[in-house]
Image 1: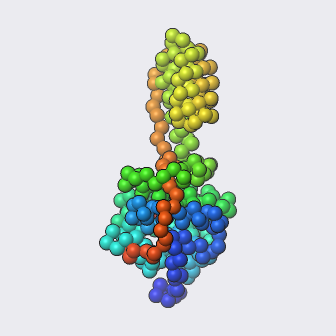
Image 2 (image 1 turned 180 degrees about the horizontal axis):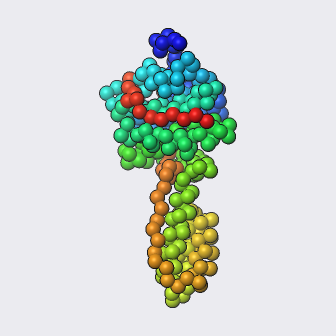
Image 3 (image 1 turned 90 degrees about the horizontal axis):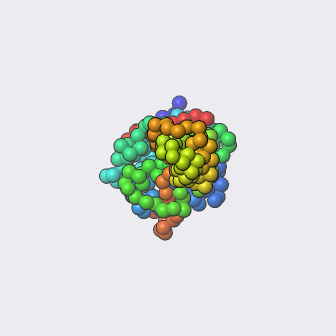
Length: 269
């Protein structure tokens, strides 16, 4: 097997490097915009790379070596991220710069792949999987730095909540159910009215119009049969609730000389 020194790596063309030709043009443009605004507002460099195969290397070694060759992230800060897809290998890797290992740890990187990337890949949707994975990474960085990237790429517009494996919908449902119980605890005087009002309010707060309608119906009906139920808790969320913005101008001028910390995660599909 050839050594890593004998392997030829492609040159970076920008934030998005679709050497395998699997990303749709519109998705590629949105990815480039997302990476550019992330760089401008946080200084974090996110590289997206697809290749036909990483052979003769394994995907992890390829990711580390490509990260080092390109110098993803700022020199001295090592704040780079790499999302690498080996199409024929059916393997995807997230490689994390040393300076971001506390922000995107191995467990979180694996969760992003499991929830947002692999399900789309299994369905043959490379553009959707890559975009959602990149958006989830960007969201995590923005949250850690307490920065708003804008609303154009908000989670609901990216389809992050559409994956069947997404945990966010589960938490929404649990939150609605729990808050319905809280509403019912106050329904002993005027059961139907209180149940409808609280159900509609909390349902809408958590899940929009549909949640409001469903919550109102559930609260109205159940409040006639349950006079006093102890209050329930609320649910948390996973990814997809943050905001992302459009391209703020400027272009790709090369990566900044960052180093990989060796962290991240990989998955097959």
